[in-house]
Picture 1 (cartoon, rainbow, N blue to C red):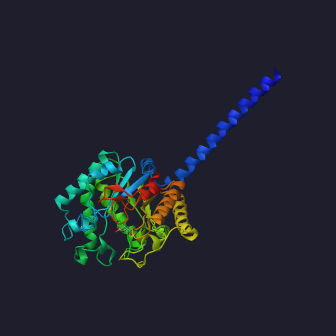
Picture 2: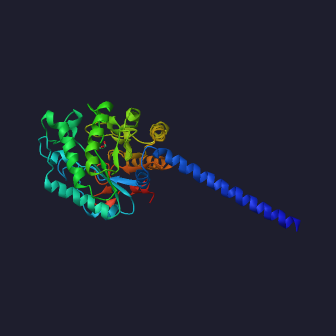
Picture 3: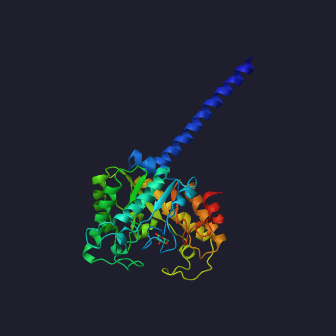
Length: 359
Ligand code: BGC
């Protein structure tokens, strides 16, 4: 009899301690997540967590004209990426498709084109990040390939006026649509200037979209190293912070005409290359938890000049390191020179798909 009572007590005690242990473990996980959300609303925190895996439909609507860079946003892509990705990022070159004066009136046919793409993805349950890409005159540097030049005194005003129109046009779309006002601020856009520009563009967006989630990243091409200089409007509660990482650059950008890394034959990933990647991700997490903004990795990927075995190793390594750190991400990109899908053969590049999606 005694030993039966003893066994019961033992059973009760281990169950109670077990339950407490599980509770503490879960609670500390929740706390770790929410440290990244103390500066944002519950809605934006939730949305940031739901972005999960994403793909950039790059070099399509951000080319001077769709198709100029060999890739078009084929409506069939919606079905192809469905089930593999929860989010699509759609880079768009609005500035080439708007009047060249300060009003920057966006051409109706172009708006309709973007509507179709946005709505196709939203209707299939995707989160959609809509950005403004390749308006290089705004950075004060060299014009992008086939970029339409405008008078210097209207460059910045055009930026705000484009967003006034974009924000109004999409004001009634699902909360799953996120605006990203500017891809990779750089050049003459210093941290101080970006702080002012972002506050101004956000004010314009907020007139028609009072609490839509907006994504923005630091200067220097959205690099992690520029995070410490990033300042966000104090009263704003619906912002996700995005960073891009292409470390190790001499591998990811080898053979590209516009970079210093014209040599090819660089492989990946040795210990030092891996450390560069993880150090950068650790810094991003540290910043996010200290400042309370959700962090998002909006671009990573490698140019097709690298050998496929290295590209697959790089892709898998970055993806796994991101997921270990609970950082949601979007791969650069779907079907162009960094792409994971061969649009001519109409098939996935199997090693990249496996590296990114695990199947
Ligand atoms: C640019 C692309 C470029 C990619 C990798 C993107 O932000 O818009 O043109 O290929 O980064 O460098």
